Length: 502
Image (tube, rainbow, N blue to C red; front, side):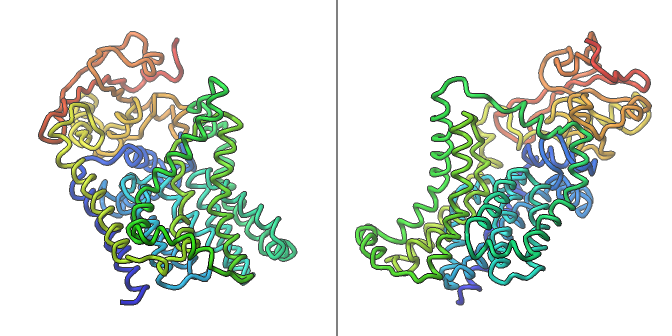
């Protein structure tokens, strides 16, 4: 079997398994997917937490599948498969052989971010093909100098910023590389880099205008969720914790490497690496690889150290799309492996273990779980009941649902009429909401738990209002997960509060 065929079989098999298992066994989508569907229904230019691309793509799958809620699982695997495709071609461009490109994919696939988090399609997952694609196209643009490559780089950069602003870190790394490397700097005298910048900015104009109109909602939300350092020690512990988590997330890659070397192979590895001799081209490509594998991570660690800020570990997802290529290139794999077959077996076993974990979460976890889980939340049944209650009382389809993100988003996703989610009944957090229309049609308030009164976020709009009804739903599974209590209050047309009363 050729290396390209082996890579295709490996990627296709993984992608199908990682998409099919959650499609068949997950009773309810994960949090980020439910949120994305609720946002995507509005087709806005931005949302409370993120730019709009993830939500737009989820909405596209919803319409294509006729209301299916499994599209996120397939979007995740399409994203990851595109990332593998870019890794393959980048490895070849950096001078690696086809089999080395294959092993770059295998080693990357063994890292944590490409396994267990995959079913939750979110901006972190969607960044994988963006980062890998931008690095690939930038390398090609530097080598060929064709305007089409520079144009494509601008398009992918804009797509990335519509996905998550974290992509600005890679854009900065590309810009700095262009400035500090003489052969790259020469391109500044050509139209290429300027076409990239102009294309990216032009495509971002609608979103920038939305940001201005909403008083930079996504930035304000991020600021509200950030936590300042409470002591000087956190300027040390936070970056160390982030780095430690990223190293731990490479455990599968390390296991695969060790399985390929064997004990004897590890002992003689230093001698083999010392004997390698690289020409100028190889050194230049090695510098390119190290730059984009290490610089963004170093910037994140430096920012955390300077500000004392705590970065979410999952934000590291796109930072390591080059991990497999780095291992293959600098460890001279698979030539230095004594047991390449053992490495492949280890990678497959790692995938099988994680596939078993998500299957167990769906099918077996309810047998011992005693807390509510999002996967087993009976969102569909709850949404149908609430939609029916509104229709019985108001005689119309449910137009708007307000409440916390999880409670309201599940109704917005699963109710047949797809009501708009009015997040926390706060238009500052839901700028797509037309208050005049809400006033004409009314809104349903929804919350979970055993309290009869409204949660504080809703009570400030409706002080003194209590629930109109409550109902308990068994978890959408057998086993020991406790039932979920749902409460609702109906706000009829003309009675909608347009601002907090207290």
